Length: 101
Image (cartoon, rainbow, N blue to C red):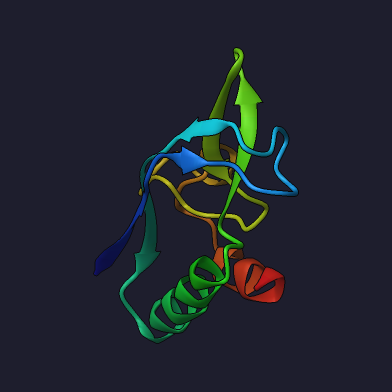
């Protein structure tokens, strides 16, 4: 079984520690995928905590515009394509992401 997580980052202004503090940035919709099993559910709880603590995303300057992008926590953004394309199959993903979290 499959489960998807949805993150919505609203447009806002960057803060201290971002590349250009005080500059507006563009938000976006982000999707991540987890297997619907015990390990996937445990990982979803940890990813939610990371999101609540502001660790999921970062702001990067891209073509003169500030944008929200994925941070350093690895997310599976596709059900296929394998590890090289941030998708499944990837037998080590849940172990690796839990180590990072």
